[in-house]
Amino acid sequence: RLIVTQGDTEPASVEQQRLLGKTAPSLYDLRNVFQINCEEGRHLWAMVYLLHAYFGRDGREEAEMLLERHSGDPDKPRILGAFNEKTPDWLSFFMFTYFTDRDGKYQLASLAESGFDPLARSTRFMLTEEAHHMFAGETGVGRVVQRSAELTKQDPNGDPRKLGGVDLPTIQKYLNLWYSLSL
Image 1 (cartoon, rainbow, N blue to C red):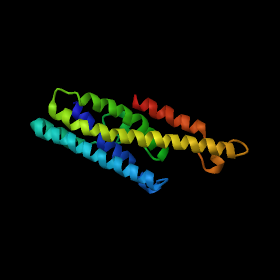
Image 2: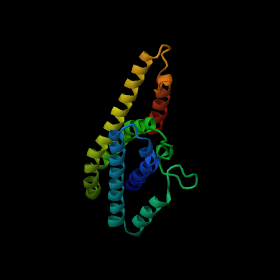
Image 3: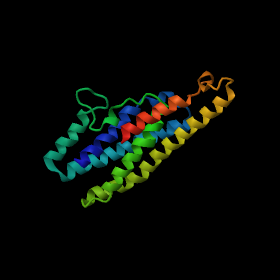
Image 4: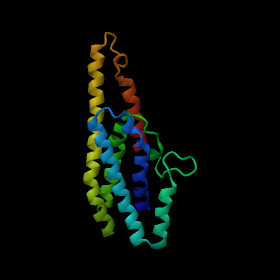
């Protein structure tokens, strides 16, 4: 079940983030989302390999069911709730990678200590990549907050939205949502 759940999260985040490339705020962010999605695909491959290689017909059936579930699908949703939420904008992406990938890091760290050696070996490399996902989220949130503060100071009424920014109450709303979804 741990392998199936871990495997289910990997394509889910790609499904959630698939349209973000169209609205990337910078080439740096575009590169990050593409790298993260490629790494999620590699993580999925690792979990599917384990299911196929070590769990016989049951493993193959579970791997096949990974393909039947889709993020946000009302009939066949992803296993974990955070992976069924929409990620329609970059602030959601930054919060997702800041909080949800942090939770994923702890899950992978525990799997890397598994007594099932193939699982432990497969998840160790994923931890390094997960650190990059969290970095993208942390620095993304930091940049949004920084720019919001700068625009708040620039606007005579202290409203960054009038200058194309995100106000602090909106940032707090996103933070509350993604933090609670990632618990």
